[in-house]
Image (cartoon, rainbow, N blue to C red; front, side, top):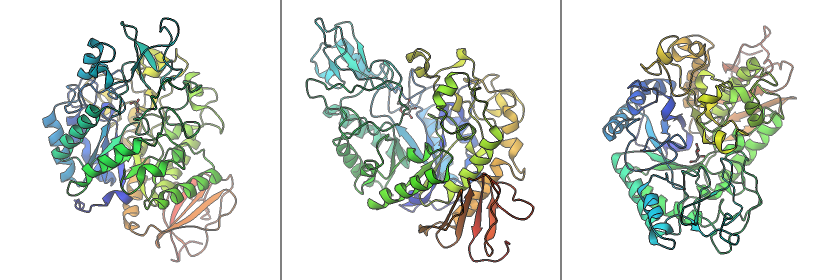
Length: 553
Ligand code: GLC
């Protein structure tokens, strides 16, 4: 069925499927995902019942950070295809009723971007350097970085150039930060947004949306921060020299005017690692439309913790007249099947770096919980962002050989943080065959583990009770409950979360150890796993019920 694509506010209660471009589907057989591969597999996304796809960067890039180091914002990297391939993908997606959101990376460019090359070739104080953050160093001969700022990927956020100045990079040294006090930067991003909007994209995901503006008043302030906090952890305090500054909102007010000037208006979603009370500022009515809910993603498998995050998210979003987003996984975090398989309190990154075996993950529990989390998430009012492969229940690949690791974090932290490769392993489409249907080449850019084909789309298709069929059915039923965004907690027993969404859907999740009898008068629509023989809800299981109807005992 082709869905209606004309409604301007389609995004309020939608399901957006994240495609991590290097790892979705590879048409040309070089082991790296590409646009033609994606176009050929969009049927899977439409069949799943998503409303839109978000494509991670596919722009020309030397790949210091797998494409988040952009050398040209208005073209396609040859490893991913051509602009014509993009046009074709867009047409195919729209034909299937899927909208297309693309990534825009405004905080930093690649060190191979012509602007940075020009800056390197220009003297200190030049206009070319002013597009970046170049400063003299501290110390007698400027031999120390201009401030103690640390890169999110480990080590100092400053690198020295041959003439003695230093430039700032919140991420890898190959990702110099732009100076958003410079008019050229504003003008060029406006051009980039319009370029893709004119081609017909439906919106943008804004990378590191909270980092663009910096307090560069001399002398630069030290932050006294470490270098290995999780990627989207909020900064400490509300006055940080480069995170979440008030001035950043000027950028989004200007961008909103641009996206609103298209018919229908296009949408934007922020990746902003900020505090819960600052996040709604990004989604005020004249700014961005949505922001990822990393509080929900980081929530441990615990009823009270989820309840608190849901309450805060709904309240904060409603205060600015919108609805929250919900997200469990993305290309930057350990996959949630594995997160939920680990005992509470385990530091995921440390566990991964230590080899991913101590303690041994309880994968069966992780899978049960991930299935329950899917029903919990998809019942909440707002937009759900799904990460490719979660509909297959893919776990983190925790045992990638060291020589296969590509994330710059691994080297930059001196092997203290293993990085994000384990959640980026290419998708399995078929049970057998070269790279399990990912592409015609023998090897994928990140090695797929033995047995990966057992979790493939082909292996799960039509199999009752598979992850894939659970997601498909949940998305189908969810569609029927759209429109009424009222939300009420229902009285819950110990270890249970229970709520009503709209008039027609009750969701109950059993986080506790003992089975919970289901209330009389509620009819089961969908369960994340089998109920007990007498119809009770087992531990780590969730159920959707139709209120008021008879049938359950
Ligand atoms: C965002 C991206 C991440 C990338 C970083 C730097 O957090 O999601 O993958 O490494 O920005 O661009």
